[in-house]
Image (tube, rainbow, N blue to C red):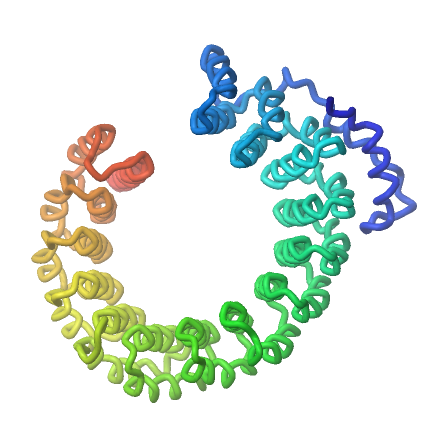
Amino acid sequence: MIADLSSEEDVVQVQTRGEYGEKEDEPDAEPLIATLNVETSSVRPALLPHDSQLLHELLTTLNHLQPQQRLEAIRRLGELRDPHAIGPLLSLFEDEPAEISLVAAKALATIGSAALKPLLAALADTSSSDMRYCAIEALGEMRDKRAVIALLLATRDPDKYIRAQAAEALGKIGDVRALKALIALLHDEYTDARSHAAASLGLLCDYQAVVPLILALNDPKERVRVEAIHALSLLGDPRAVEPLLALLPDSQPYERIEIIETLGYLADERAVEPLLYRAFHDREERVCQEAIMALGRLGIERAIQPLLSALPTISDSILRSYIIKSLGQLGMKHVQHISCLVLSLLPWLYDRSQDFSHYVRAATATVLGWLGDDRAVEPLLTRLQDDNFYVREHAARALAELGASRAIIPLIRILPDRHPSVRAAVAEALGRLRDSRATAPLLSVLKDESSLVRARAAEALGFLNARQAIPLLNSLLQDEALAWPDNNDGQRQRVQDITNLAIQRISMRN
């Protein structure tokens, strides 16, 4: 049986007072269990009213021989959020396969506050590691700050798996009271405890974690170092720049990618030259790609010329497309370079020099849209006839980005394109250009076989304030309740939501 938690709570209060930042002159807080001691009858399920017969059937299915049947019953019990399911779900924490217990933990988290006291009791029950592990999983998913004290105690548990899971749960909850405990776990003997602690420190967003995380860059395990790097990117403190640059040359490929990504977000000029070196000299292609993207995010002006100079020397079309996108990001930040960039990039709209050169043409189209120079309109119109659908799609969006009214007729002409992603992009572009000439063509694609195209057409008609579209939009809502060939529940709901919004937009304006 699960022990009563009140005595354990007293232990938690005594052992954590003063250690995790509480002031010793403050009066003792009321025991946590008393705080949580609400009658389950006062907790109302989210789905009201729910069928008691359904609840009974689902609880019975928990004993089904087939794991898939049990899993489905567990998920549905979570959706019902009925407190009567708490005990049966807790009993699954030691079930096999392990997926059963983890899904049960998520279901209990979904039930919410009514499950908090039983979960804390399960955590306090030292007779079963599986029970405690799953309780921590559920408490983390629940994100209830009332669980913090019990989880702090769990960070010092003799069981290494419990310590690691507690570290992860505390990060999900995001309470700064966990700071000292998580910093202490950076020195734990168990690798997962250290890596989860590093990840959670990033989620706490407290600058006191910066120095401990910098020290964790020296951890012998790559997994811990990678989590520390990612945490430092979330904290955004410039003190991390030099240690990250020092780590870069001797790091493993995945680690280098994390370092480079973080340097891009930290936006410090000291990173420009090291990133340029990695962009063109690293032996790992994925590292080169990440370095090029980081230079765009970095936004430092002096990266523009080296990237422009490298563009014709790169033989790989994918890398070339990354350079073009980074130049676009830099151009938006340093507008004095836009004219030069547009003239330099226009020829790449027609690139066919390498395999996969359509990526170069598509990236160029996108960037020309970002840069907002009308000189790109006519060249982009030619790309609406490109033999690659990806280029046609990006050219359509770029023309909308430029607000090119003379693109209306060419866009209408390719609205029946054979590829659904192009039809969707064209419908979106016509909506953004706000030209009533597009109304009739857009009405014609409300019956398109692709849910994405239907959604974009409905959205565009809303932007066009097309009153004559309301009957067809209402009809679309009814049709979406039926089974379109490409629909799943998420797609159907998305089209319905967008269509409802379009109807509301039109109705408000008329």
